[in-house]
Amino acid sequence: INQKADLSIVEDDSFDLVYSMGVLQHQSSSRVVRMLIREFIRILKPDGLIMFQIPTHLPFISRLKPRPRLCALLKLLGFDRMMLMRRFRLAPVKRTAVSESSIEETMISANARILRMDRSDYNLAPGAEIRNYWVTK
Image (tube, rainbow, N blue to C red; front, top):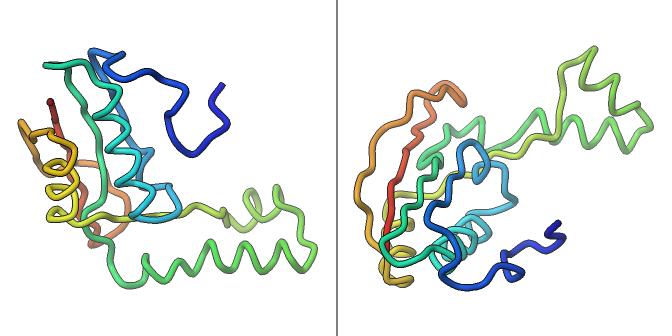
């Protein structure tokens, strides 16, 4: 099991397919998301396929992260984590977006190319824009 924030335990050019749906948006920052996308490209075999999903825009209220912040505050005050989740439906879920231009720059710097990009049907939050990417190198 990988305990690191990167995929350094995996050798270069190891996989024909890398698939990540509903994962990257929960990383701590867009910097971490871009690092993971570069790692996906590194571990992909030549002519392999990466498919991932990422929000490219989050509405202002989602970027403020009021629910995760409230959850963190209540946990600090001693509230039980399970009670916060079950009774108040509060969870420390992070949402991170990465702009399309930043994803394109990441692809170029990692010598990869986008085969296809389209809008996802996944409903993360009202006003969120989510894209599916198909990438190769």
